Length: 432
Image 1 (cartoon, rainbow, N blue to C red):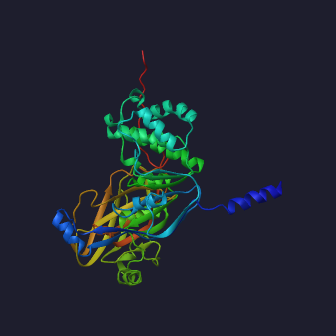
Image 2 (cartoon, rainbow, N blue to C red; image 1 turned 180 degrees about the vertical axis):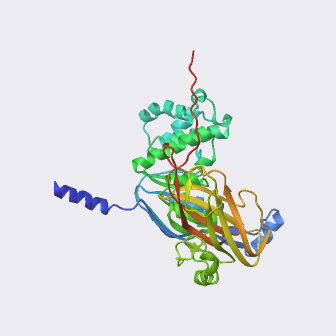
Image 3 (cartoon, rainbow, N blue to C red; image 1 turned 90 degrees about the horizontal axis):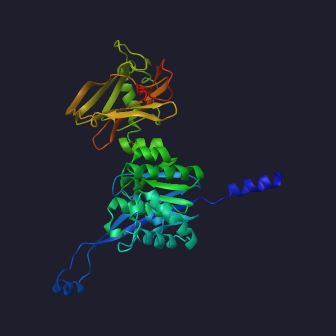
């Protein structure tokens, strides 16, 4: 028995990762000339073509263990979709290698391979055959696929008469018939209505429970937080970060780059020591992990104020709270953005906002200043919470970022459970 357990442990430890991406670079050739006439085509034979090389991915390396859920985020054009296409073998890398251990189901372009002149039922049969299902399995699954897609009434309708949403629902329902080892998802949640999106989320939740490896590209950061253990941040074809999902999303949203202005942190701390001593814990030695930025704007003090106007670190649930940020700008700074984020002690984001989101333009700042954010009712339940305060440019370049440096406690006499108090009310009406 003990030998068998040892063998199982040995096999588990020696199991290959699901995906190994090693030094992958992808380049595309972009021509700069268009020959549209016969003369131009003849003329072009006698001179070299003019083109440029566009590098979509630059030396990407990472490993995904079996059962992991990995998010991939970044702006449009950052290389997210190209990366998934290379992993799914739709594209070949120019340099580098990709090793995949397991059966892949790519949800990259739903409906690719569907025929517009075939009916919904016929398309299910063709696509299922490509997926490797037997005739018996296909016949058994057709009704379930149509029901899941909400298209039972349209089983004999040609695909060309379907709306885009109907086609997407059919493609998704068909593709999930066979549970994959590795699931690649590219912006599936960006299409379809709310009901379809919820069905997608339910499927992904079930896959995650079963240990299916998932790579999840999405601009829906809430969904990425929910499903992904770790996340990759892409920018201009480069992998800027790969780590815990919460940390990587913070970096993406606020443009955080912890490598910026590291030498200036202690200098800034000394210059502002008098004002900093008034704020909560800000006079402590700053560490690289909780403060960074280029210091063009320096946050010199942060105060948490209760309903009486006094500085406090304990609040009653439902009471008002005011966060006061004191700052200094040595030079004129146009349109800075100030923001906050509140996390619970499990590092779950409870609330985040900034001046840009809420439509407040600060114009040009210079010298010392103060900005407050007033929270009329602190709708948090009992617990300890961490506060992040930041000043950054509109393009998210950080001026001064204080990452979860401040803490406060909320006390609630309400017996409801969770993080938030939604002030709900039960209404009972007896039916006659």
